[in-house]
Image (cartoon, rainbow, N blue to C red; front, side):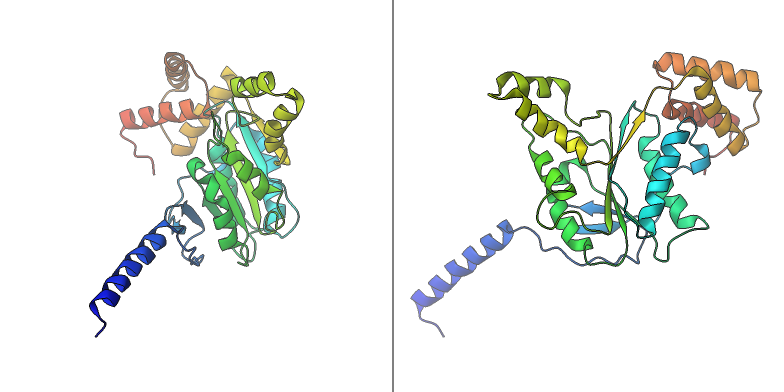
Length: 291
């Protein structure tokens, strides 16, 4: 039995140790990559949550983005076979299939005739968790699988400096990017930073050129830039009819055309997302479920 003073000291030390344990970052646990082909990075616990069924559309339904589709698919196929490949930035108009393409390419690689010996893994990291990317890299670096790290709607605002961490992880630092990892990101901005933020850096810096160069150099870490632009009316209608045919929706072609154009007009946008929203409405009116 410890004397009273020693017991009190021990209790204080225990509380201090517990407090330090709570302040320390979570320990990165080894993941079971056999549980699924896709995961979501949980930054708070430094763990990967398996995604049994990825919310994706089939490659054949992605219309009007043929060049971007073929380029990203080729880059990903090389990577899956263990060959050099580039990080990719998919930027441009909203609703034109940027994130859908990343998920579709991943599914195509794993299901295609040339699928790799080990399934290609897709890991989604949320924009606000970018500063934990080094921990994720530490977890997957020694694993024999190959990984696409995917961040949807990546951009930086205001005083956010986490873009510096991303730069170091992608190509800089002593360790650099692991050979079994590529980073794919989507954004509405080509340079991932708002124009007014970049202009402010230029106007207040002693050397404006150097200040703006640091911002722009983030996009340079992506060897592959794929631009997505607003679609024409013909491309929009091709998307609509492609969805309708694929789902077997029996509705007069002229009625689909008129309704789809009205749908796009009321939303002020022609895009793949708008086309799919119209198809969902049409399927509902026809009493046809969409699997």
